[in-house]
Amino acid sequence: MYEKFFNFGSKPFDLLPNPDLLYMSRTHGKALSYLRYGIEERAGFILLTGDVGAGKTTLIRLLIKDHLDKVILSKVTNTKVDSHQLLTMINDDFGLETEGRTKAALVRELNEFLIDQYALGKRCVLIIDEAQNLSAELLEEVRMLSNLETDGGKLLQIILAGQPELKETLNSHTLLQLRQRIQIGCHLSPLKPDEVRDYILYRMECAGNREAVNFSDEAFALIAEQTRGVPRLINILCDYLLIDAFAAERREVGEQDVTEILEELDFERQYWPEKKNQRPVSGMVQSRGRGVPGQAQKVLRAIRTLEDRMDYLERQENSNQPASMVGLLDRIEELEKQVALQRQQLEGLRLSVQNRAMLTRMETLARPAKEPEQPRKRSWAYRLLFGGE
Image 1 (tube, rainbow, N blue to C red):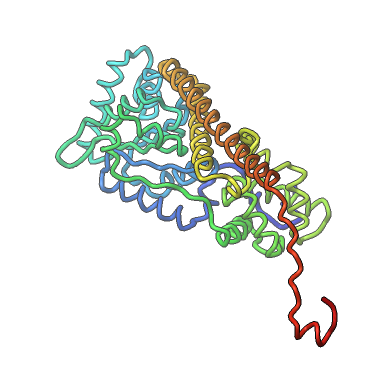
Image 2: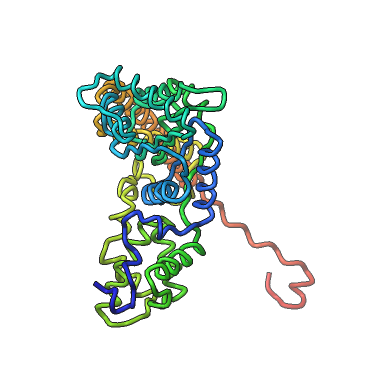
């Protein structure tokens, strides 16, 4: 739409995970080095995590494109499946026949394939994207796939990529063996404010014109603040800013322009929905803890922790995992009871503080007024000089 006006060869802020446009920040460069090292050293399990829009898929595509020589690859992106469907997708992506195969046949044929590829000097790598959707039972089955090994290393290397919830699932006591097999783990952190500036300029340079738009320093700072350094959100916001600049036929973007677009998009509520869930607790003022007793602050923190855990469990409940549904509902019910108990304790503290304040005020009012002091009798020298009694 605006490519010709700004002399771009392509859209600089396209949302597609294009490895050619990947900005190699400090955290992305470190993660890529870890992934390459893990593949070269035949690490059994490699863990890659990052928030939504951090660039996990783009990084994996770059790894596949430029750094996987002599590697046979299977990549799974649809993770809301059962164990038979998962095995079918893995074998199919390795090029194996899957039609009419039982689960046992799929496992046997996969093992035979891995041995054949090892004999040919090739490495087999399985990449599971969006792995946070896998249940603990499915993750355990994935671990079982890595059991085939030689003295030289694993016949199948597995990369698990997903959102931070994946770490919470892996912390389950039932997945201890899998946790112990993860030899390399890396996390994609958001971009720093100075990296946000470089990221925007880099994307415009890749599109063909680094100087297409002149962003003010204030505009860069506001973009970094509102997107919190998440590449996908930077792309969304900057794409709208370029459309707005194109419509006004200008090549400058200032702080006011960014503010107007943020308001039009309702950016805060649209892309950071957790702020909508922040609720006041028992009528207490949620300032920075001022005026709140120390014990009450502890109760508040406990309530917030429990509510965060409940939000996570409710998300898990909605992820179509019937095998763990009953357990999740029981845990949610137990957490609700704990929250109710904590709220009662907080309400008791609030009433106690009010009562103490009221008693103090009543005692003050009940004290008898002090009798006025009698005027002190003047000395004879004072009366002699100034008169009076």
